[in-house]
Length: 145
Image 1 (cartoon, rainbow, N blue to C red):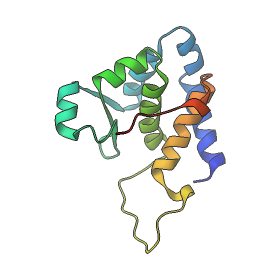
Image 2: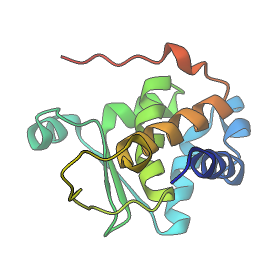
Image 3: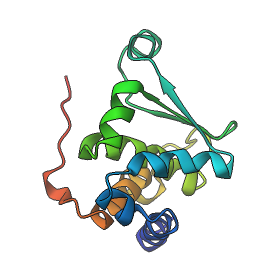
């Protein structure tokens, strides 16, 4: 999928869910609640259960079979308050859904190109959505161990 296609889908997603207005009204939680109207489940997992299940090796998960996005409770709460990094996690997982990603293994002698990489695509989707919301993306940072 091309950069233009990913960007277009991210901008359209932002417009359909009226994210700018919801951010201004501090009601981004409403955007996440609206996912259920489209048959998408947002599974908020208790923090200890998340850590036990994932060893904190991942910050979110999208299951294309059940259309379920799972995140730990603290990530969801921070995202609802407008925390940029928590929003990135949620929009990244939503990006997998909007971009139609399926659980596939890359079968080739060489790694996928950037444009073929589903994680890179979901990252770009999240970055575009956050930029649409007025976040300055060059300062996004994650704390990795």
